[in-house]
Length: 399
Ligand SMILES: Cc1ncc(COP(=O)(O)O)c(C=O)c1O
Image (cartoon, rainbow, N blue to C red; front, side):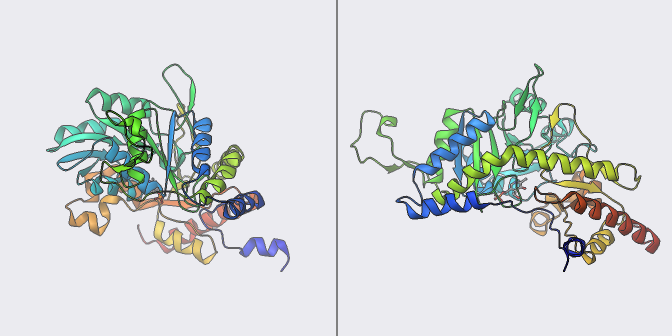
């Protein structure tokens, strides 16, 4: 098959990793060495994360979900507590609250940026029966939620803030002094990252907690390794040289040296990945902006998205999705609202609790976006999307 034919029929997933020889060599180098886990690559990766984001501390763990769970525990979330988040997220965000025995509360999103609405947060907190302890905004699709404003709302009420930055490594936000800062360098108590293959960088599976708080970093480090404390200097008095003792109920949420070696190479490529994602997103937006049927995520003058997802909102979404699939375009839905999942419905939640998010989720669709996607492929997706919308309109299903 000649390459132009191939490019017209090649299946395009919504996201995928970009791995090269350097990553493979890094993983092999670790495999040939003495430490394949609990070795020096982990700290080196954490250090690289701090240098890149400006965070004071980074603790790498086995997944973004583990990072969320440990951040919640480290900030003291427990039974009888509640924490507020958005329903427009992967279930892992609110699942972390449930893992702690606490209750997630859902506040609505803004209709333009699709991130948590600070006004809605206040309203939910006022109506809550439980003691709200924290807030978990999500930087949806790579666009930083208004972190400074949300931190102001939260800290003003004595809550902590964990930014779910799983979509937003490499994104920036502008602080009150007009200074651009990286996601991870923020007044929040912690920021959580994921290194799943569809994200900006990958370690296969993996995640991290970034924080400016020494106490949070220390507790997350302990909890990722069963709650075992090793440093006798942390005890009152002194302990023997071999000292290690379980002080808290922790987990095995460790990441391996193999993953971290790979992750370090990926991190060195992050600026290029983000630049490429921004270029492709601009191309998409240029092609799609004139079509009145397609809603694009609003840009925010106080934020620079790192474009994890190219999400649009369209009428007849399910028909459009099916049409794209017949054309070998692997669009995806991010997300069915957390409050609509059967498990959450059984807990008494319902999508109607957040009507803006409910309306958005009914039409949302994510188009292929990843660094190795070609510009001609973006054009192919845009042309096919317009054909899909025409066909769905002609079929007139009224959705
Ligand atoms: C917003 C958000 N939070 C949390 C997670 C969980 O990350 P992981 O898959 O690394 O556990 C994801 C992963 O898709 C996510 O998109």
